[in-house]
Image (cartoon, rainbow, N blue to C red):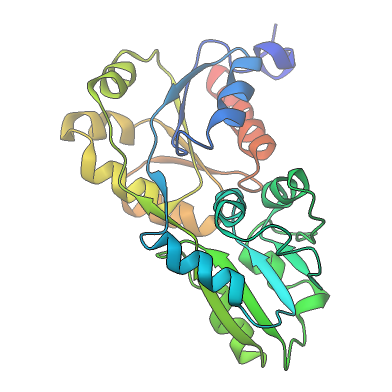
Length: 264
């Protein structure tokens, strides 16, 4: 059967798909790979932890003045917000915005309706939404981790908003074990790596053995944006493909398409 006609349940058969998301958030991708017949290799590019001074952050969330819009930057920002915020903190929220559909779904699971970008599933997409075209006089709280892209806050300030960035969690280097390295070394070729974070890439390149990095650079890398593709190519990866977004379905669809071309 031609590669392009393979049923969805076998579209990734014979490939090792390297999932670089943190262990706490990698489940949907891992299950999606397995549902398509692929072998999922967990290689977390970072680990997530609560803010260093969680008590201070919790107090900030409890005492923050009137907020005209809450912006959540990732599913992890939702999880850690609800760990730290007092019950009902968003009950009277005027606007809750999500950077991407996955974040919106995380909010929905917590009973919070939100607006996600209709277009690009990233900060640029959210900034294009009409609701943020003229936020003059608004107070906007951005729920995030330090060390991110830092695009939302400066643009919103330029548009006249007062912005408070609240770091509810941290992205730390991964704690890779021999089990992770052995799984990668033994993984069947071809490898298809799924990447949605430049920080995860930098952490992995600083952690993995040099010989393994060289093997990795020769395999296909599926990334979530053109910006990330440029960073990956700059790190020496030679076979880089851009998915529609960082959403699980988009990354997996791109992996299936790349593998289909590989099989031709």
